[in-house]
Image (tube, rainbow, N blue to C red; front, side, top):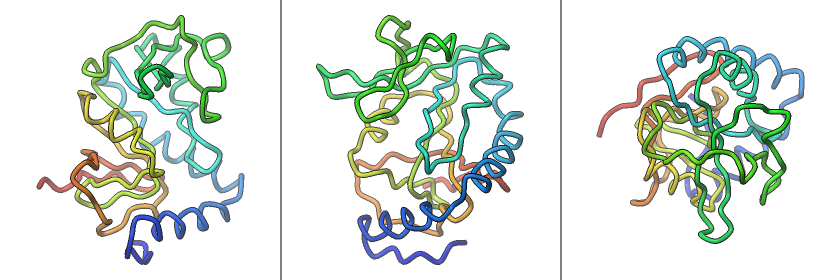
Length: 193
């Protein structure tokens, strides 16, 4: 278990971001491969999966997305809707032609990609700054994923490095929870409330 102080969400975000900055590309690559190998068997039973586009400091799940697209799984990514200031989900069939750099510098599906209602997913992969053993998630602070998770069906699976899993993190009533957490070295079933 990591020994980050968790006095406030802001302090915890700062501490973990500093740690993330020190991860080399080589370590990120190896840990991402380990994560994908651990996660892949879990994805086989899911038909409709909401992935995320990893940022430079997040574990890379893109190889799994590529693999599942070749296997004809229904895969989607969050797509920012300017009119609502909310993320929806759009199906991705081809990573070469269906993706652009979106609102916050994150890869998103093009507007002409098929929309998939958030309540139609079997599995949702969720990035985060930190997670705790009860399934609480600390995001980047804008609440976008909390709103996605509030409407998404299926199993919610947090993705992070081992040090991003803490015994507990500060939470608020609107914070969404995950059912499982996967790291490069383990899978955790979160405790029920």
